[in-house]
Amino acid sequence: MFETCKSQPPPVESDTWQAACFSTSMASTMLSLAPASASALLDRRDSSKVILPKVKIGGTAGRSLSVKKNENVLHNAQCSGRITMTAAVNVSRFEGVTMAPPDPILGVSEAFKADTNDVKLNLGVGAYRTEELQPYVLNVVRKAEKLMLEKGENKEYLPIEGLAAFNKVTAELMFGADNPAIQEERVATVQSLSGTGSLRLAAAFIQRYFPDAKVLISSPSWGNHKNIFNDARVPWSDYRYFNPRTVGLDFEGMIADIKAAPDGCFVLLHGCAHNPTGIDPTSEEWEKIADVIQEKNHIPFFDVAYQGFASGSLDTDAASVRYFVSRGMEIFVAQSYSKNLGLYAERIGALNVVCSTSDAALRVKSQLKRLARPMYSNPPVHGARIVSNVVGDPVLFDEWKQEMELMAGRIKNVRKKLFDSLSAQDKTGKDWSFILSQIGMFSFTGLNKAQSDNMTNKWHVYMTKDGRISLAGLSLAKCEYLADAIIDSYHNIS
Image 1 (spheres, one colour):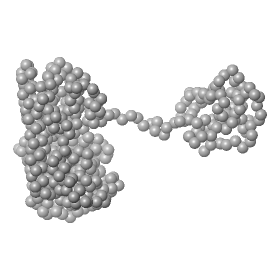
Image 2: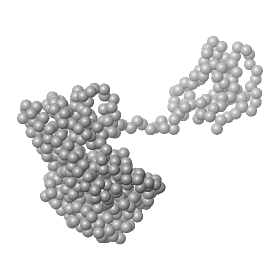
Image 3: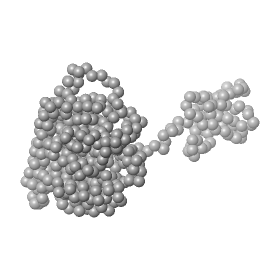
Image 4: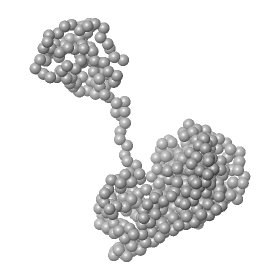
């Protein structure tokens, strides 16, 4: 790597400094200088430094090297009339890597933590909080973990498809244990890394086996949806969903865009509690959505992150998925237990693919496992055992449903109190009833970026820049304060 000296340097006068070889373990650049420069470089009695000419180093032109006196840097090797020197230059292999922007959702929490104001509110991340705005671990989760310890279960690798007991109960929870698709073994279920990992695994499957297909994503949608399909190199386009004029569903635009898309697209649908708007289609609208998807030979792809957490009923929140299955449609369903069991850090979820035959389900599952193996090998066991213990035990299952009703009920109460506060404090007569018609953890306020910035900069309310707030991070005691912030931002910031 480095050139070494093979002969001793000639003797030098006491008032000059000795040139020697410079070697280092760091990456080096070889510089060659013409002989005419040698005496000028070495005979600098009145200077503490030797200044080298400007040279090009590591692709950077016009950089001067300055070497301190008595550093062993130069050696006249008297080779072919040239002076050879070696200089250590720290040029990173990662110079071309740019700084990534902060995540639009998780970055909100980082900014919130840095704020020292006592009135601050974090309404950015969708994580359930108690009325005291503290994280909450469900009682059934604690009991399920205690049961795990009592059983003394080991920490061996799971199969690629995950824990068998988990896959069984999670599919039954989504589709119903008596669903023909379950009984006929037409559902391929693979445990995955929560909802995000399930979506990413499905995206890899689409890219490999449906390379010409496009994914249709609602506008707006969860911020990570587009990132997932971009990363998997799956093309996507928007379909209209939100009507800013009514702060409601743009159903006509949604249907028109799904109809206009090429046949055979994957249509990404939120099974319940649409994120970020909190606006869900009605039962009649779901029927019409299914009609046009079947007409266009599209494939429904449900993202279900809030089953039981939106309405408080597991069956109600799975109704849209079960309806599509009842019509004989082949569908994808990504599941997450982050919200309804509070297992955010366990990264526990599943990907389900409902097929028309059991043979197709076997083949699909085999290829999902093939994709998962080089991606993450196999999923973690802790969260899977919690879910299988809770859902598979009738006593714990009933207790879980009661806890979900309490969590969903708290958010409904906060939603009602916020509406009442807005209506009482806003003297302009603006209709805030959309707050009540939305469902689930989030509310889409209709505030634009400048207004959302005002919420943060003036009122210390942290939220995503699209105007979404997480009601799970709001308490009844803070509703009036939040209403003041929303009214000020809406009416005084354009």
